[in-house]
Length: 515
Image 1 (cartoon, rainbow, N blue to C red):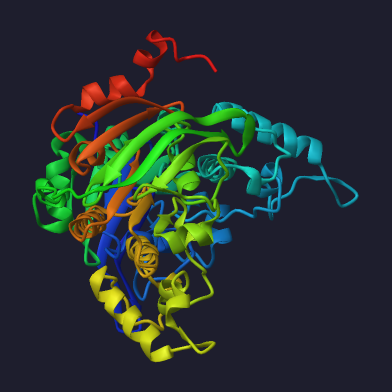
Image 2: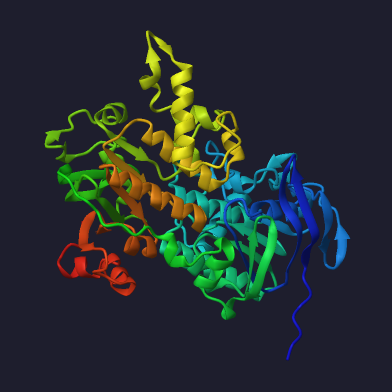
């Protein structure tokens, strides 16, 4: 039997203290060449802090890092990169005003002599990496014009360009399509076959188990469990992470339905990125008071465009939307919010939060008009509403004045939901609300959705997670190329059947495959 390879990179007894917060407590963690180590844990468990220490972004309070068995001090991320350690961050760190190739070669431009940049060489290298990732993108295209999933591919490409010995992937697939995930997994297997050590962090537990060789679980700053990936299952991981069974993560509810609240008839929406293509094609649906409807679809199915059209963010080409039987005539965000339709967007960093504002300022921003008295904002009423919402949506924060960037991804998402709820909506739209958050925060978000339905709101959410689609909504609509390919009540469909419907085979057989 071959002895396991020695770790190429190790954290030895690492602690990290921020003020009175102990983010890491004596963690021993290592990654071996040619293996994928999946790291699991709730938001705030210490995963990202540990990765930042291994990538030279943060420094341990006590303990040390070893590279090739020798203690080392990684003074910066550039120093770590020079020693073969690269990281793909959970939150994208791209420059939207620069092209794809400029983002890939930022701070490591190729010199063409006489101080000039060899853009031809950079462009060719960028094109090669994008082809390997099976992405047909122009290297000179602005990153700001790309959809979120394509931006994530660019972030991955930038890390691959470094040809690292250790590659840390923090939520690399949160916005990728199923095909893009398959391509990434192929690339990961090619990297490990050449001896690269991979650290893989994901809240998609089944996905991470598929690619991992080893798994470790962090909880409250400690490494609490480790095992071979072939020795464990999702239930074991969830129990180690949160101390409860996986089934307890989904709220059990018997819906009490009221009147039909939102009606959509023959809605037509163009693809904002390609106006010659229809993102939504003659879609009709209804949702009642107290009902939760899920929209399941793969990337490109039109699920985001549907919610953005209902919220007034993108224009419609045809059809009508009615609220309690009355047409919603004003197709813009402000009027839709005033009429009671509000959207929690897919990209919380870009569209949901103002990074320079505090937690409280972000919460009250969309509903600020409700606190205005005689042309002035009543700060007392605003503060009371914000504090109440922090409690209602269970945001873990030091208070309304805390910086929004100090919160974990799951708590930031709760702030975005709380901001929407402070507008006093009748219809709550949530676009992939659990994207990039841990299982514990997911459970809190699902319970929030159920609580709003019990209050009589109509809740419409999208997801690309099959387990969420099967367990959360009262009714599930499966979207394929802008058309409803199937409608099911909870318990009427299993995972395999859902996959079959969502791949569009039935739609193609019915003649709906052409545009």
